[in-house]
Length: 325
Picture: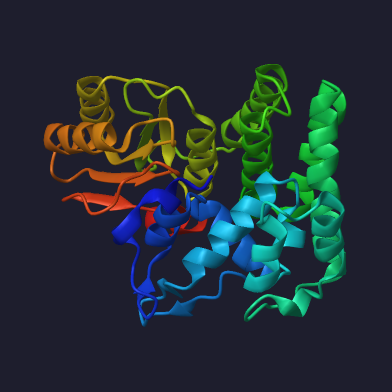
């Protein structure tokens, strides 16, 4: 969670403005999660460039690191993001007692977070209840209940909001719980399979014209995390693309050959944090060189590198949809 905290002198100066990718890299919090926090709780506070890109003050790094540390100590994001930086420092200090931490989190006003935008309490409570209900269904291995919750929230929120507001935070919570040793691999595998089935059904049920432009979707060799790829598939079919879904761990040359043979306009690659950053950059550069120049290579996910020549990075499902339309 806080892998960015050991980067030493690579941290930007406090007066600088940084993009969401830099904020994610410095704090270890995925870009998707930062966007969810901004949408739900109004933090971190971003300004916008003329092109619509988010820019954050470098001071947000310390705040987000402390929020992440508070989550590791058992608080919810809805609690931790309500606190100011002094309260977070007190809360995460080694001398703070558990009851003191939770008292701070429960009594803090939503307006105490710097620049916070207070969302509807009804909406926030509903989303938290849904996430908590899914987590508890996972712990009980209640597949019928878990599936019913996902379907209900999908119908209530719509596809992209469902994935960004429920699935991504849920997966983040599950990953944190596993990292802290609070759950074993079995519940995580159970939830992943259930989510994969729901997402697969979402994109397979969409009818697309046979002459629609083709989007080929894959992960890189050695990458076995494909839930992000299924989310990209949902977005792609809703943008009117015909899919060639290769799935997990496909060799670079095979991806390029399939893209040529299928007449793909786009190759979409999902990269998780499980893929080492240097390896991802090499493999993606190799893939770019293997692809015909007219095929666009789009890369997203927590582990997606940026700044590679001829490769476009997308940092949200909404951004991917806009690119494919």
